[in-house]
Length: 281
Image (cartoon, rainbow, N blue to C red; front, side):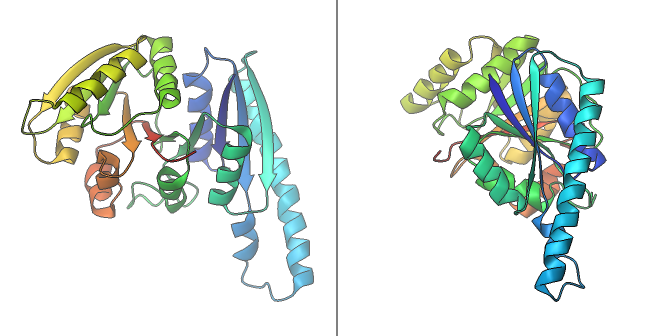
């Protein structure tokens, strides 16, 4: 059974991410955890000066969190009834990053699905601070859904790679199953002015072939020096539905998650963004 965690701040963007999770995994048996972490809501109150007031406020926000989670659950069940999907709601007094990390480890989650931006929805940034931290530090694949994205099947998937980063079989299986559900084409894009692969790169390329048997694989090369330009051009020209990157030292994602690079590429990435983690788990 696929285990999916969807954090929510009860914004439209967060609900849109939940809808995407229900649709993209509609053919799989899933347990979907809808989680709200509310510690920041408690501590951000300016008038808090006494412990007694803190306890009262915490109880009030906790009840409100449970009430809103039940409302979200009713709505998503109404819109996307699926006998293969079971839901759990989790209201937690803690920071979003800590609670996501704890639940990922406790439940051995397969993927976290969340909006690129939450309630604040600052359009001057590509990823909200919470999403950015989850992308960087949670040891589980993260699927980030852009604001206002209207679901369509991920038929064309872009996977830029230098064939140097080691891959996890479990996370490639997630991608394999998703691509198999929709008979997707995965475009493996090698970005390097020098075309020839080393023996190590050839072995890693073969490992990808063996690990993604359900998808049609296209192996492409771009001689563009700027990785972000190469990726954004490819997304536009090939009408890509989903971007896949691996989080690892010296990977494309490490470059792309610098703020300057995010600002550069963010204007063009209006598609779901799957980050596979090459971190210890």
